[in-house]
Image (cartoon, rainbow, N blue to C red; front, side, top):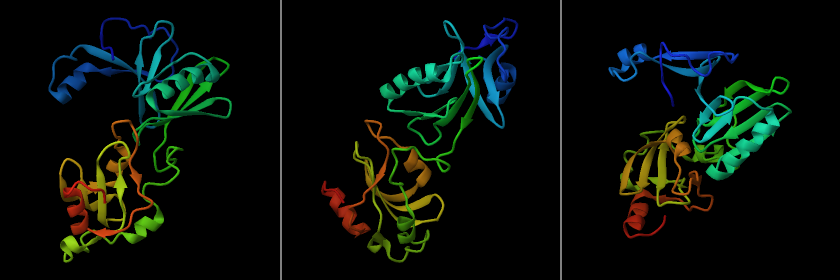
Length: 248
């Protein structure tokens, strides 16, 4: 990312980029209590209602920083830029696909990394960028939902198993296929928060969230999965199994 002195022209000043704005370094410095951005400005492209895309200088065309390593040229047709996006996706484990004649759909690893990039193929520029929530359209390779309706129905409400203690049953198991972390919820608030056993660096009881599980990636970048073949066990059984080095 490049900040520019406020009085200095930028490579984007004479380019008709709709939505081009500059973050005010003085305002940011006052808000964060830091001095290094004072007197500076930072280029972004604003897309209503509340999406700002970082704008970087490229050798031939401005670069849109969409997310992660997904940095795409501002100028080009949808099909030209799709070739570039596909190469990045292959290298980084992202997903991209075409929609209609003017849109690229791209997913990263995290739940907030789903964007649709729309092109004007006549003027050969990006005309719109839209961020899509995970709940609206999950990443296609998550064909098995992390928490389906049947699993939700098996999980008692939060705090309802307090009297059972370690005899509470964990009816669902989540795990990372490329690392050693496992989660066994025994209760769920119906929206996001679980309580149960977490087997990772330690084996301990605690709270964790669906949002957190959807965002976690293991050492190979693989998402958390639900074990479709798991047989429900008590927290006591699961704790003993993991403490002995087994798998629940």
